[in-house]
Structures are given as C-alpha cells and as structure tokens.
Amino acid sequence: MKILSIIVTLLSLCVLAPHVAAEEDPAAVAAKIQSAYEKINDLQADFVQSVRFEDFDTPYVSKGKLFLKKGKMRWDYHEPSRQQIVVDGERLLFYIPEHQQAVKSRLGGESDGHLPLQLLSGAGRLEQDFQISIEEEPRSDQSIALRLIPKNKKSQLTKVVASVAPSPQVEGLVIQKVTLFERNGNVSTFSFEGIQINKGFSEDVFTVKYPKGTEVIESP
Image 1 (tube, rainbow, N blue to C red):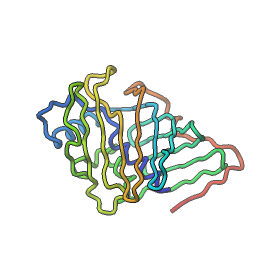
Image 2: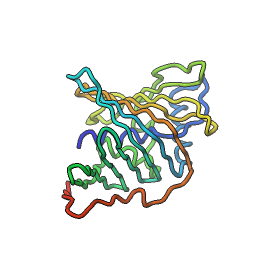
Image 3: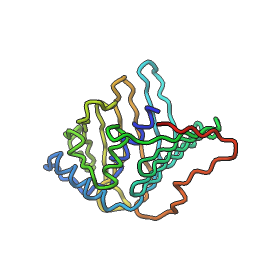
Image 4: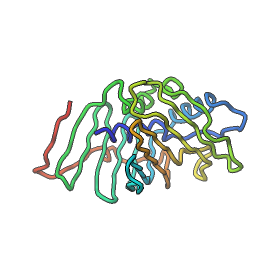
C-alpha cells in the first residue's frame, strides 16, 4: 500500500498555476499555485507513470486516466494491467479486477497521502508542508521546475520536483510532470497530457462497481 500514498501525494501538485515571472521567489510561486488550485472545481487528464526501482535498470511504465474534484480523486490504470484507486474524503479504495480484490482503508492524518486532502479542503498550504526552492530557473518557453522538500520527517519522500509549463487551454501554467524521490531510492515520474479543467463530469466516476464474489478487505 506504500505506493498508494506516494501516488496520492502528487495530487497536491496537480494544479493550475498563473504566469510565473522569472524574478519571483519560490514562496510567491507556491502562493499563486495554491490560490489558483482553490478555483478548480474538477480536473481530468491522461497520465503516464514511470517507476524506476533502486535495484533495476528498466523502469516500470503504467498509463491511465485521472479524475479530480474537491475532496475526491480517481486513478484508472489501463496499461499494463487494470487498477482503480479512488479517494473520497478520508477513505481510499484500491481495486484490482484481475485479482478480484478491493482494499478499503483510511488515510492517516500524518501520512503523505493526507497532504492533498488538506489542500483540497483548504486546510493546508504548500509552504506549510514543504520547503520550496527553484529546481530549474525559468526557460525561454516560460517553464519552471520547483523543488519541494517535505517538512514531515516521517515522510517516505525525500524530494518532489514539479515542472510547470504554459497551457494552450487556459491562461497560465499547468503541472505537466511530477517526480517523486523515495527514501528507499525508488523514483516515480508522472507525466500529464490532455489536461481538462472545469469541464464537469458525473459524481458516478467516484463510485467503483465490482462484480459479486469480489473479496473486499477492510484495512485499519
């Protein structure tokens, strides 16, 4: 279940950001990201996840679709195998059709996975949860990369790098890639395409229907 917390963590960064001027400091950029994020009602995007494990040269690549609303999120993995991850408030559901198994659990208050829920409810701020600096200075295409170091000493992450770039869809920047560095040496990169913001979709997206006979495990 460890990877689930890491996956959910990056949702704190999947936000719409206004234009970033080259002279602005990291705190100002973070404040703009947080301000814009609070105006997002819903978001959907295609994603590619690449995980490079410490002892393996070849990364494990997955593809799927992301859905996000205030306090709720869903990850539909389509390749190489089907998986569904749904967060609804404080509850998390991990469903693997191939295994006919669904695991339900509660997100802990101090876990990595709880950070995005604080942001979704307006109870958290990037600058409160991370030490923020510039990973890469703004380029000619106006893209920029932020380095975020978790302040929580118990975090499984040592660093998060979020890359933002101009979007033709909206006025401003969107997070296009997030890289998560774990203490065990694993590195996970999520790239986003086809980002759609405030287009609207049914709440039914967050209801997972699994067939009769599926093993449902209630985890503490």
